[in-house]
Length: 215
Length: 215
DNA sequence: CCCATTCAGTACCGTACGGTACGGTTCGCA
DNA sequence: TGCGAACCGTACCGTACGGTACTGAATGGG
Image 1 (cartoon, rainbow over the protein chains, first blue to last red):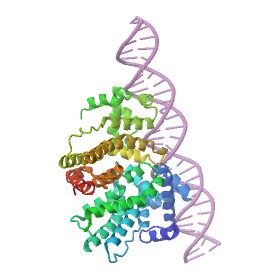
Image 2 (image 1 turned 45 degrees about the vertical axis):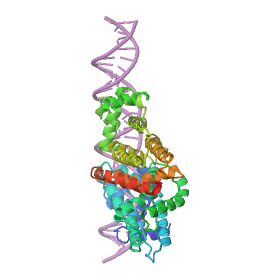
Image 3 (image 1 turned 90 degrees about the horizontal axis):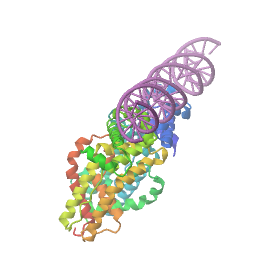
Image 4 (image 1 turned 180 degrees about the vertical axis):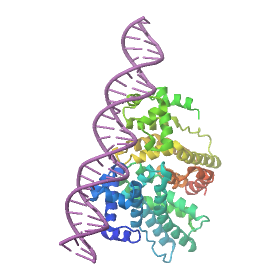
């Protein structure tokens, strides 16, 4: 997973030492393996071979550590939108299917599920700071990619919609349905991943039936 | 909210004293107000004017209390499927819109959100027992209602689909999209509820475009 | 009138966590 | 070589929670 390169990349504009990145990586591993309960300051310090004092010096607070983890992970998952080459009906469909598969893969990822669980667990208390952060830095990214794709499709006369948000909402719902919630609730993600390809194609077909210009 | 009648109803076949129902109600209130952190045994005992010893005698364990809360709430939310009267295109559409609104209302409910957050937070650890319970006793209910509705539509020649689960997945996704996750993450649910009506109609229109027999 | 059962209220115990303080070590630098 | 900064490892503190034990007051049945 090229963690070294990814880490260095992530540290570029976030004021994070390489060492701190390694610590955050370890903290994410703990969170993925054992949930929020396993994410104790002592545990992170032990797993990352650093002192609790350093943790508090770097991140100020346990909540600061959680925020840093979300920001760190978000900065790693850069989504590159493929240059909008000349679109025709078939290439648009291919792009949409790729997007759908990517979306399902991301949502089913260990770290994504763990961070979403963490933010949801913290949502009641404290004004859902983590929830907003996750939404802003995670969702927005993939949302922008989809918006660009949809807009390109409309510009090329292949899609017809008035409200882009509405169209994106339909696309998202058709792709994800209730799978995300099921996985968040603990349904074994491993067994579902096999169906992602078929699911993505079905969702895109349905979406094109709704918003495609030529049936 | 007719809590007395609802409580008595819920106790019917679950071996719960009326007193225990009151305690569970109070526990749910605590959970809704303050999240899992606020759901301490001492807190429940204080709020419900009972002793911790009684809590442990009745529910055995903190996890037992959580399970009892989920079961209790599920037993209160009985979904009645309206007798499938003679369906035509317009009545099917009306039924679907009502279903969509009900679904959105349920998912946006305080208690539903709190219990889902609780189960999701517990999902990493302990084999996601609560998650399965929530899925089985909550989702299955509304899923059956939808399945009955779709099947009736097909029988009446108004809907066309091969795989009922696939059709239900599309319906669910079009209705809910990512609203549920946003609410679970702490987005203010109050402001969203205004849009439920329009959202439901749009989703049903899209669904009928996909699966209706007369375009 | 007596006894058993139930339960509220409280005190208690062990544990685990967040956060802080301190001693010892390494490393860069003058 | 000496100095200071960063930092690891650990010990420590206060608190809060889950769970248990005890006491005293009701209640009800013989």
